[in-house]
Image (cartoon, rainbow over all chains, first blue to last red; front, side, top):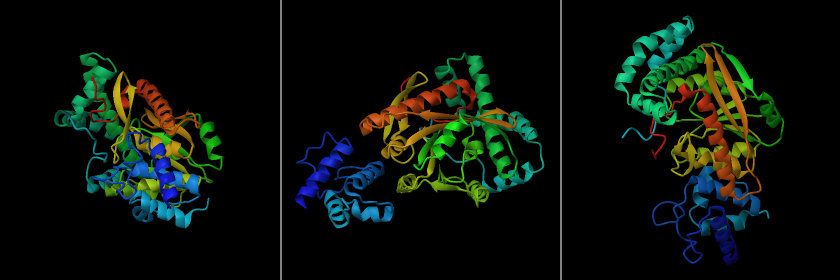
Length: 86
Length: 294
């Protein structure tokens, strides 16, 4: 799980061009949206959806399902571990 | 300071729209054009801040003199009224003469298995003819503003019932982005405007008509996300009954980084938009402060 979290952090950092965010500051439990979090928005989520599809073979198209999955890096990792096809 | 954002909804209430549609079933459309030009537009120009915005656009972006800019501001508002009338005339069942430039490019993409994206703008009158570009084998999804008047939405629904056209309405939680991505993943066509920042505040900056302007990041991000082909589609009014659809391919290096892809695609879009706006300067209908450095 720890390896998956680190892989996801690296992949998301690269996909979203989050150069200013160091791996140490990239807390897997921090909320991805809103204040006190990483401050992503829906366009970033779309990038992550495409990333999950390309890297892990996960097809996610239901936005309601997405709300629970995209709470933090950790919730994404848990979902990937349970549903990955690659 | 004038409004930073345009409300994006058709002027008038539902009752007025229904009355207009009934009238347009019988009346010569040119009578309404003349009526609005003589009685409605002068009043609108006196009351509406769009007057100053359009005037500055002609003075600063097109480089016209004071007198010419004043006249063009009036013509611009008359044309805007005409394209709104035309939209309701279409709801009333009127047909327009449509000419399409580069139709083969659209057909080539429509014949492929993959989906593709059409980027439009608030120039000319996309709604009147944009939906002419449809094919049986590919569903066409148009992104439309959710705050639009009920009468407009109802008439769109009536017009497109039983066709291969569907509407994706913008939503405050931005879930329409998921619908767009899902449609593209299914190999469908998605059409959206790419000249107004709406929802996500993310933007990309470009030189446009000689000054810096912000364009929304979302459409370019969505379009490049799956490495799909992209067309610019602009529909310009050429006569009281005529429109011309300009189809242009927007190229970007699909092997480049995501940021570079977005930069290249948005640059191609802005270049095509500038070309059409210079060709039809009076059909520019973004009545808000589009340029932020003067």
